[in-house]
Image (cartoon, rainbow, N blue to C red):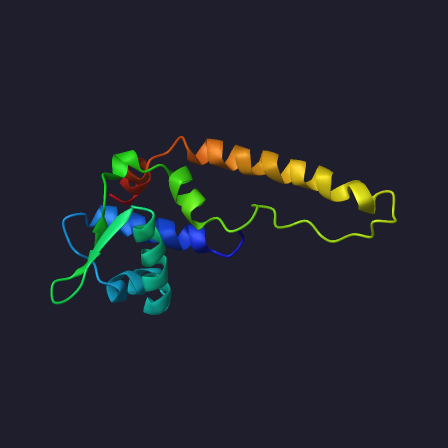
Length: 135
């Protein structure tokens, strides 16, 4: 998951918590992140599909958190955007090589341990706690 989606999703959610009494437009959010609003809308769609945000269309529309920030762990956000292991992916080695035929099994074990450590650490902080840094 080395593609920046976690940072984008966390930025979106932190901004929604920071301005929690307002419906925020994707243009406003994109301006804060300094990315294209299309990317923001795509990530909002993903966050909405996982129950973290709610949206409404039309004049006065936008996006808000769907549940209290105190109930959203940073690990929840990570799980929603994670597409692959934190450390990347294993390769396709030569099965005739004594190392190559076993390496992925051992690499995947390291990847799993790293992901568990990240999830454990992120599971100790709520979105509300993270967002308090901006007050």
